[in-house]
Image (tube, rainbow, N blue to C red):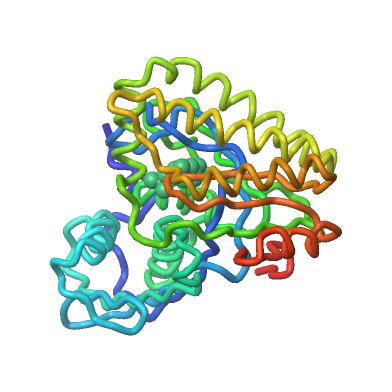
Length: 328
Ligand code: PMV
């Protein structure tokens, strides 16, 4: 099968100039969990996310005498796992051409938030490479390329709500993301930090293990596809309650597939469940907020601006994000 990078990039890349890009991180409201093709990083189901505004990754790519990778101002050894992942992706772009690059990447995501940065990292790297090589590629095509860095990176090229269509083609050329053309200025996200250390198991390993061993996984792809469509409809209808309850149910269903894996894959900690319990009580008292959780222990809340004071009081450690305060 043709290399997807060969299909969209010029056969010979021009000499690079300095290029840079920012990409926001994102949180899926309807999750991607499970691949239909490992090599092409193709998802079993479509997913839909909200980007985190100014929280993301800024990457600068410049011509150099030799490859180097710096993270938050510190130059990394080329054996560092992060540098290895970055250069592996850059090599897919270069396809054997001798074009050494200096890659400088900075995260604006507070470490205390405990959020993974692979989504914004690979999206920013893809856009910075396109800038450095003066490529006239659409963001849609760049999102397809970012997918090879990490699945969630496919959705990190835009602000606001973004839908990643699973696509139908075997070569993955139609598995790309697109932004929903709407703004919801009252929409808020809160990150309730539970564990800011590294994940117990990467999402790639976690989804592979779940798909291979969980008896509940068979129900997931169709449910996830249906949730994604229903969540998109709720967003268009500005029906926050429907959106929130669907997003929470979708996240819990994903965690249910993991809990049923053998051995069980448990990302949530006692404190995560305590946050969910507090949220349920607060909701019984009228708070209109819902939770979503990824391949880690932190809980993310979604709500509208009129609930912000109550969310702050109920979850004092939460970091609050206004995803539509920032437009690119
Ligand atoms: O693409 P990855 O490896 O970052 O996996 C993302 C998996 C989840 O965060 C759990 C769900 C999602 O859609 O972002």
